[in-house]
Figure (tube, rainbow, N blue to C red):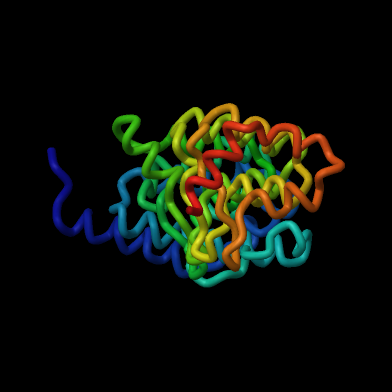
Amino acid sequence: MEPSNHDKKGNDQRVHDLAVVRRPELLRAASSGQLQLLVEFLSKEDGASSAAAAALAREVAICLEEAQAQLAPTLYPSAATEGASALHVVAASGDRPGYLEVARTICQKAGQLLLAGDSNGDTPLHYAVRAGNADMASLLVGQADGSDDQRKAMVRMQNKRGETALHEAVRFGRTTGLRMVNALMAVDQELARVVARDGTSVLYLAISLHYNRIARELIRQDKELAFSGPLGQNALHPAVLHSKSEVFLTLTIESIALCLSAIS
């Protein structure tokens, strides 16, 4: 038997009530890492409409943002940004199984949050990669609906600076950054061709930051990747400045020729 209109209205009202009440237990769960409480809280709303679920998730974000602002403001620079959802905050919080379970549950409850940007245009994937949460980033990409094209569209999403998650992966650097670079490039082998609004390519960024292994890997995976940089520069400028480092050797004759042809 289908629920009556009265039952549906009552359920939506219940979800609305949950969405507008800040729950202290959620704040405690986030600050203590007991995220199973959050999973249980969200799981209560299986019958909620997608709009109500999204509202609930955003209210949860308010509680989480308050916790993050007190715990690690440098790690969560955008946690209090207008438009950040629960998925944004959880994506930046960690890679432990509890965090991954929370993210998976939120995606199931309010899948539209997966591609939602905050007021800076940053998606949950930007948040996860920026924090170095490689497992979380992989989970988010895996939650994208549909075909490989859908996943490619997700990793190509740009924030208001025009940066993709690949820019964040390069900026994070080190072994984890390289791992995330490889994971993102596995989804879209041409992702390194996307440049930021100021012209900064991921190759320029990697060389500027002295991340030699990442620069080599970017060139290896796509010989036609973008070379541009800001203010009319290109990847050769920081490469020459850092010519004593091994990264200069990775710019093979072929790669330099491609760069010169791109700016001619």
